[in-house]
Image 1 (tube, rainbow, N blue to C red):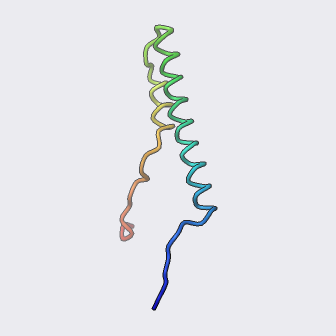
Image 2: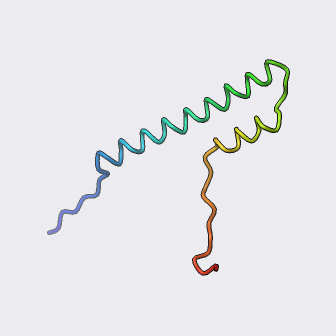
Image 3: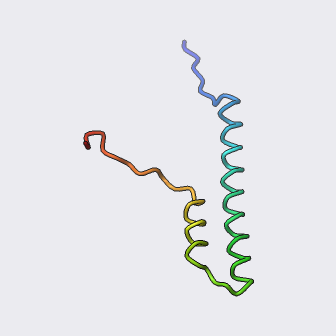
Length: 68
């Protein structure tokens, strides 16, 4: 009687692929940065750790809508 179908639009799929590529690029950049720091025997300094932490994708902070 009813024929209902659900599918993702092309723009959503393109956006998802681009976001995955961006996240992989960030992860690879962090790995290369860490490799340079370790290979030059400088260790993981605090600025390097800060850069790696800010480039890591994480969940946004969840705030209560009732908080003033």
